[in-house]
Every structure is written in C-alpha cells, then in structure tokens.
Image (cartoon, rainbow, N blue to C red; front, side, top):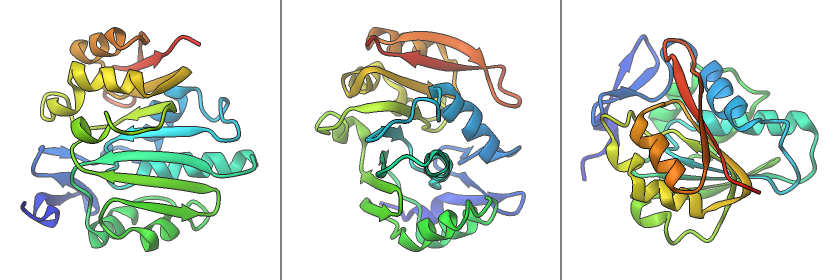
Length: 224
C-alpha cells in the first residue's frame, strides 16, 4: 500500500487535501465551525451528553471532530470519559497530523495532547476525559464485527461522489445496527442515496441547513 504521506497535498498553508480522493480533510473556510455545526449541532450536542455517552465516526482524518467533541464534553463537567470510536482506512502520519493541527485552536492543550498521543495507526487513546479508539481498516469489514453501539454518529467520509464505498446502503445498514435506541447521526452531505440508505437502516431522516457553501446537510434519528 502506498504510504499515506504521499497521498496528501497542502492548500492555503496547512489544510491537508487527500490526493487519493481529491478532497480536503476539513472545510477550507473554518474546519472547527463546520464540525460544530454539522456534527455537534446535527446530533443535538452537547445537550444530549450524559455519563457513558458514545460517539462513533466514519473517517477519523485529522482528529478534528474528536477534538471539538472532547472539548465540548469537558466543558459540561460530566464525570467519566467521553467514549469515541472512529473507523479509518488510511490513518494520517503523525507529522502530517501535527502540521494540520496548527490550523486549529489549542482547545486548552487538548490539541497538543492528541498530537503527542497519535502514532499514525489504529490504537486506543486514553487522555483526561476521553477514551478513544481508532479502528484501522476498511469500515465495510470492521464495522460489522464491532461490538459497540453509538449514541451519536459522525458520518465524515470524503465526498460520496469520490468515496462511495463509505456511504453505501450496506454500510448505512451497519450504522443503523450499531446505533443505540434514540441515537442520532449527522453528516455534511445531503446526497439522496445517503439519505435513502439511512432511512432504510431505520433512521428518521431530515435535511437541514448546511455549513458555509453547502446549502443542505443530513440529520437522522433512530426511534427510542
């Protein structure tokens, strides 16, 4: 397999772009604001946070979504760690992650703590207020055998037009099967086949206002 370092180019200084999928890892406008709008607001977070809350994610990328969610969790003052599981086929090398993180706020030291803990491969990461696991490999193989169920899903693969494997109806069925009753999912895309896949997986699906130049995004909720 070609090294993931060779699959990244840089735009506007420190915005990584996947040459494999011809797509940036986060918004060129404001990656943090996009994560807050799409993944936190889209899952009604932090209002739904509760002890033992579990977020799962398709596409770890730079770890930005984890940083934003972890920071929001810590600010609630809830006891115990946030549980966060991410499925990632091509983990980013540590040097690239460190460079990408320079575009982010420090999050009270969380950014640098995650940078220091990241080894560029699937691993369990234990940090104050956080229990995270990055599962390396193709989610089409790793998600079906995962034993967990998430309270909220961050569906953040590369564009469905460029990375259709991570948005297939079969994978959306697995997302539904690994969602707790009353759980939610959110994604920046409003592609019809993604919404139909989530609906077939048992979610109630709605289209809502997207971030920045994206007119629409998708929110989904599993019945309680």
